[in-house]
Length: 126
Image 1 (cartoon, rainbow, N blue to C red):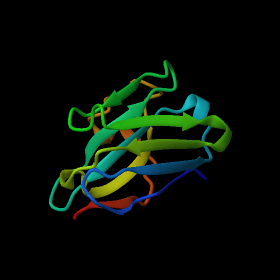
Image 2 (tube, rainbow, N blue to C red):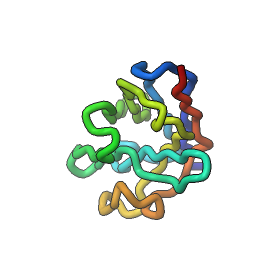
Image 3 (tube, one colour):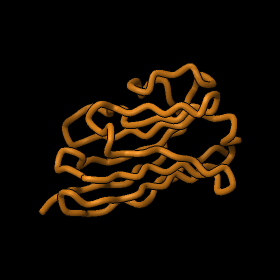
């Protein structure tokens, strides 16, 4: 059974940092590209960051470039999202998911991903 489980969310002040974890099972992470997405209240789900298993390339939405970093740890079957200098507009439920197309994905398109986790809430407020 394939599972993606997110954790690490919480309430932080603007300018603070959080690291989200996505623990995977049932898929070989070395052959799986993974994306982080978020959905704020009343908004559509949007791509935040992805990492390709083919090239190791990373992708970031413009809104998070230079603030967020995606990494993976094959030994722990985990993908992480380090988030720095958090802003109120980063408030959302964050999800990780598996690329459907074996590396040929559009990080901005949630429809290219499957096996969504349950999400973890990130709230940025003073």
